[in-house]
Each structure stands twice: as structure tokens, then as C-alpha cells.
Image (cartoon, rainbow, N blue to C red; front, side):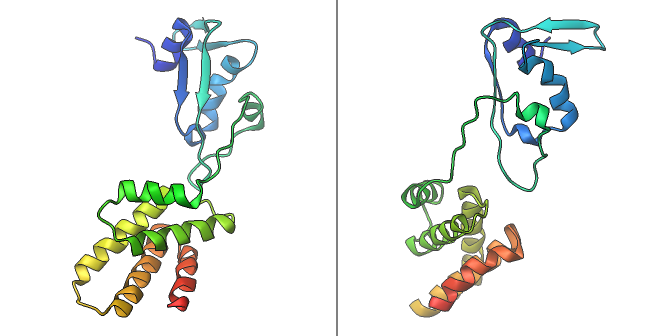
Length: 185
């Protein structure tokens, strides 16, 4: 039985490594000969060297966040070409949020999009996934509070829950983007 990577190497397929920068340097080192003109992997345990099919390709996705490893330069230089995909525009983020949170009020979705856009402008690496988690947290807090509030009080309560959610899910510093929204209320 061969791994997915070895199977793709033998058949001439494509191996896709999702979130490759979550792999350790040791894991990448074992793939280094595969990504240059040598085009093989070696198993010291089995005592074999497996050559890659000429049509074999290796593709990896990488996220830029605090839970990833720094890629060694010798690996980084072998991963070519590289395509950088930036954050979505405001309208696209709103569509993603509506799709994932069809039960959420427009006000909550607007708060989250405003948060994400402000964070992007400040070069923060918060993603739509982070926004979805913030909205879910805030929605649960809102339902649990169960209070009947006036429209103004409800908006303040929602903004407060959003601030709390950003602080709890991301970092206390993330809450500052919601503080500005609260000040505007």
C-alpha cells in the first residue's frame, strides 16, 4: 500500500497537500528531492527510492496564521510557481457569511463584514471563517440572554457580544474593531 503522494507519483497524478505549512520541517525535508530535478522520494526503512512519473505534480495550499510553521528557504524556493490569493472583497465576504449563517440578522452580518474589512485594512490575517465563528458566538449569547430590548439597546447588546466574541475567539486585541462600532452607536 502506498500513500496518496506515492500513488500520485507512480501514476503521474497530482498530490494536493492542504495547509502545507502546518507540516514540520522534517516532513518537508523528506519531500525536498521530489520537488527538484531529482524527482524521487526515498524510504530508508524499506530501502527503496521511488522515482516520480514525468507528469506528477505537487500542489500545496498555505494559510498565514499563528499556528503554522515557517517554511525553510530550501523548500520555499522549490514551491514554484506561487499564487497569492488575497481576502475577498466586502460583497463577497457578505455572500459567504449569508451562505454560512442563513439564520443571522442583517445587522449581525454587517457588523462582521465591517470587522473583517477594518481588520484587512490594518493588515490583520482574520478570515471569513473567523467572522463566521464570531457571529455564531454572538448569536448564541444573544439567544441565551433572551432579553426583550429596544432596538437601540439590542444594537448595543449585539455589538457588545461581537466584541466579546472577537476577544474570546481570536485575541483581546481583535475586540478593538468592535469598540469603534460601539462608539458610533
